[in-house]
Structures are given as C-alpha cells and as structure tokens.
Length: 217
Ligand code: GAR
Image (cartoon, rainbow, N blue to C red; front, side, top):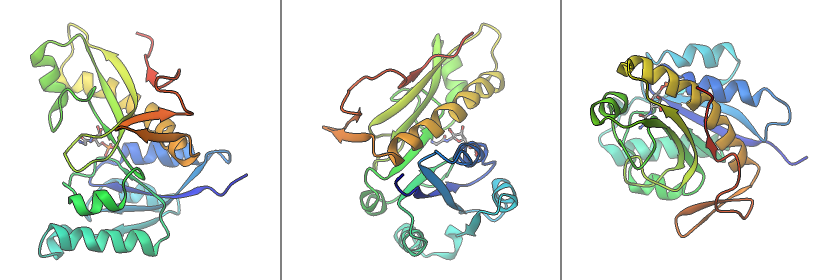
C-alpha cells in the first residue's frame, strides 16, 4: 500500500470537521493521516481535541504578522517544514492570499455550509431560509483565490423543513459536512481526483456515483 498522505487541518474555532477527519483517518486503510492541526487562534476549541489525540498542534496568530502575505508565508513555511502534502481548511476563518492558494493548488480543499455557488460567505443557513430554497446543503471543493470558489468535489443535499431555524438547519447540514469531508479527503489522498477545465473528475468520470450525498429525510 502507498504511504498515507501527510495532511494538515487548519481551524479557527470549534473544529468539528477537523474531528471528523481525525476520526476517519483512524481507519488504517484511510489514505491520509492527520499530521498537524494548525489554528490562527490560540482559543480555538478544536485544539484540545487534537492534542488529546496526540496530533501535533500549532497556533500561528495573524496578529503577530504585519500583513496577509507575511502571515501566509509563515503558514506555508510551517506546512513545508512538517512535510505536509494536503491542506484541509475546516472553519479556517481567514482569507488566503492568491500566492498561498497557488502554491497549494489542487492540494488544498475546503468545506462550506451551502450548495455552492449559492450562499458564499457567512450566515449561509439564515440566508437560505430567507431566500426560501427547498434544498440546502454543503460542499467540499478545491480552494481558489476567490472566497468559497473552486472545483466542486462532493455535495450533500439537505431538504429544508417548514419549521427550520438557522440553528436546526445548521445542525443537519453539519452532520452531512462530517460525512462528505472525509470522503473528499480520501478521494484526493488516494490520487483519484483530477481537475480538468476547472471541473473535478473522479476516477476519470465527471459525475460518478457518490459525489452527491442525499440523506434520508
Ligand atoms: C463549518 O460549518 C464549515 O463549513 C464552515 O465553518 C464551520 C466550522 O465548524 N466554514 C465556512 O463557512 C467556510 N467558508 P467546525 O469548526 O465545527 O468544523
């Protein structure tokens, strides 16, 4: 079997997606190992979980750097020193410079709580409810310089209920984030993804089974 890909997970807060990746990577056949959890905030709750799991953690505060490019250069240097091959953004609330994104092109992925390209940015669940969409969900995608853009890898569809609040909807979407993010990392780490004309191809197929998760309602 080939080596497991050394993966860093970048967080800013709770870290539930990071925990889902760590839990999935416990499986010996999982093609990635979570080698490092890095936060831009020392108070990120997820750091404690990572430490308990014996994973190397690092805090890199953006406040210690003069500007975005200096912060991103330090981030990049630390990832390289740790021999990282794949980067997963998991609630990492920083806009990355195009320079950093390019250096990790097609090796950096993100999870976003909406069916992209709808509802980029923050407060996605409240905005979905205000708009009256019938289906909401989440997306795992390759990272590009524009926020919440990039070739889509997987999506999960979450039907909206009449009595949903932003919190109840967020909870059902989060459950699906925890399903699709490990699947997306596994596909990337196993070398099963290609990007052609800014669309993701899985095992040579544009729309294979399993890239859309539709949970039972
Ligand atoms: C998740 O819902 C993730 O999709 C979202 O932040 C939350 C982090 O939760 N990310 C974004 O909005 C990125 N644009 P977590 O810390 O428990 O994983």
